[in-house]
Amino acid sequence: MKRIKLVVLLMMGGLVSACANTNVASRNVPFEAPVLPAMSFAAVEATPLLAPLTDVRVEGVTIRVPRSLTVSEANRYIPRGDIVWREDPIGDRHAQVAAIFDTAMRRGTDPLDGAVPVALDIKVTRFHALTEKARYTTGGVHNINFELTLRHPETGALLTEPRKVRADLDGFGGQQALQAEARGLTQKVRITNHLAEVIRQELTTVEGYTNAKLGLIQAMNQL
Image (cartoon, rainbow, N blue to C red; front, side, top):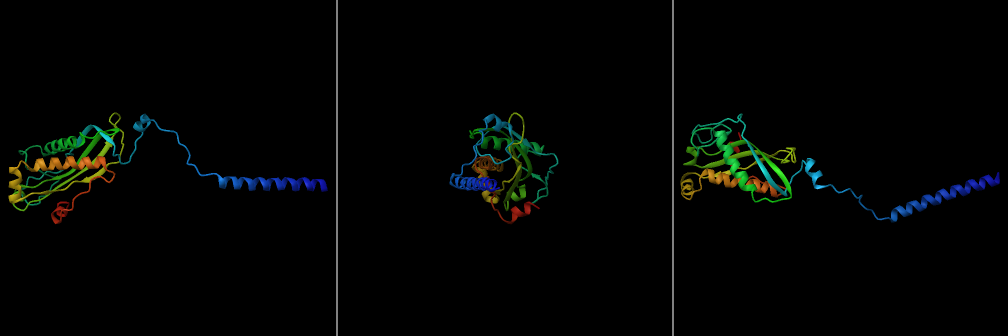
């Protein structure tokens, strides 16, 4: 019996010693982050990132101006309507707005030469420029909203979630508008240049474009 007790005591002592040694060893080993297998670029291309991308090159541009957007031809200071546009002849305003966006988006993205190929998908949700009455009197705000999505250029898979962008621009009025037109700065020229810069900032900075604060008329345009 004494011999059995001795064996048990020796075994218990060994277990305690082993536990103590294990704890000391684990405390003395420096922490190392687990090494993850590297992903190939092909795998990244095939996997939707659904996150902001700022190192891109645009290989295709799609502009959508839904026919559900209402058009106003009323010559008021702030007419009701999703699309208000005057600098092209009366016609298909949806197509005219799409052409402005297409020119602007291509101009703003042509210089980009990042590592990730993308297709740019733009959905216009509001394009509210100035009427004749506002243009030649008080001026106002070009109220422009759109949704931006980046897709895989071959598969069409989403690379980012749709992002709502507000890209308002101050609208010249009265003498300022006339002087701008004399220098070739029509509404179309100013809006196109503005949208080109907006998309450049959206695709090259993490925070994206920050809309300007243009006062009461800007707020009224959203009603």
